Length: 270
Image (cartoon, rainbow, N blue to C red; front, side, top):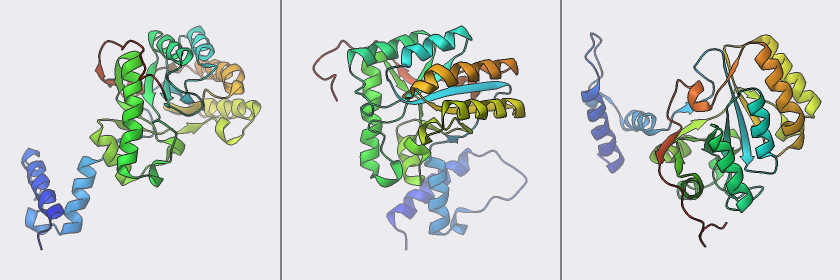
């Protein structure tokens, strides 16, 4: 039976097949795919890419979730001492409303210093527990706020709790965004002390992997005042360069679009 999904799947498969370069190896004919296989190929083709590690050797991407928050500008100032760039995955309405004058200034200060601003979606909801329409709204609300405040729509998004599924990958792809996870967790959000987080950073520095994509949270004072300067010191001593996520992935564009920031009005509210 040729169901609508199957027809769409075969249509996309035909398009993909036509775009593939010729090879000596025989490719399967379209009629050889059953409906499940066809839909599987389509899902893979329409899913957002997921990055769990950097691809550029000798780089560290320091990332912060859940802001903008109280210690954001202090973090920016500490990063400057080490000539380090970082990436801030921000929420719209989590710890604080993104539209407050204080958070507007924090974001503008971070962006002006060359740090990447990315999306952590609006209210820090678990993507795997909400509908695709709700997730699309969570993404759009955050993107809209960043366009108003900074004039940019981020090209990268991080799912709260690092949780995503095939449906949420499709929503991210439809929004034009790539998903970013991490390969090193400082542990601050699960209750690790600053001392333990420092020890974890020392361990990963000693292991000296080719690259590191870190997870930190700007909403913890210990992270801002103790862990960050320690991490920068021990990683810099190992010869790493501190870059944004877009840079550590080979110099991708951090933003899907850029325009003039908006003027504050009544819509700047959570």
